[in-house]
Length: 191
Image (cartoon, rainbow, N blue to C red; front, side):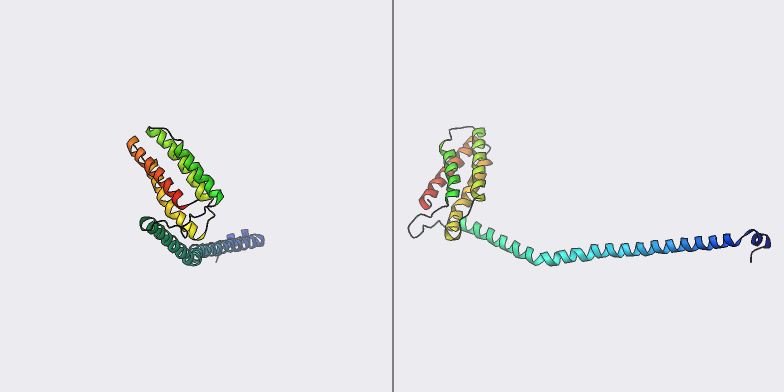
C-alpha cells in the first residue's frame, strides 16, 4: 500500500492518466512487437518463397534453353569442322537479297583493300566485323539453305576474328589471304 501522504496527493485524474498512459504504452509496445514479427515473417516469405517460385518457374525453361543452345553450338562446331558445304542438287543455294547486300559489301571491302600495315589491316577487320554483324542481323533464311550458309559463315567469322586479333603485318596478311579464299568458296556454293 501507498503511504497516506502519497494517496492524498494523487487525484483521481492522475490515476486515470497514469492508467491510460500505461495502457497506451503497453498497447503501442505490443503493436510494435506484432508489426515487427509480421514484418519479419513477410521478409522470410519473400526471401524463401519468392526465389523458390522464381527458380521453380524458370528452371525447366532455362535447362531446356541451355540444352538447346549447347546442342546448337555443338552442332555448329561439329558442322564446320567435319561437314563440307553441299550444293542444292548440283545448283548454288539462293541467298536472300537483304543478306547478299552485306556479302557484296564484305567483298567490296576485300577487293578494294590496298593496305600493308597492321593499322590498315585493323581498319579492314573493323569494316568486316560491321558487315558481318549486319549480315547476321538480317538473316531471314531458313531450312537447308540456311544450314549450308552457316557451314560457310561460321568458319568465315572465325577467320575474321583471327584477322582482327593479328598483331603483325605478316600474320594479318596470311588471314587476309584466307578470308579472300573463303569468299571464293562462297561463290562456288551460293548466289
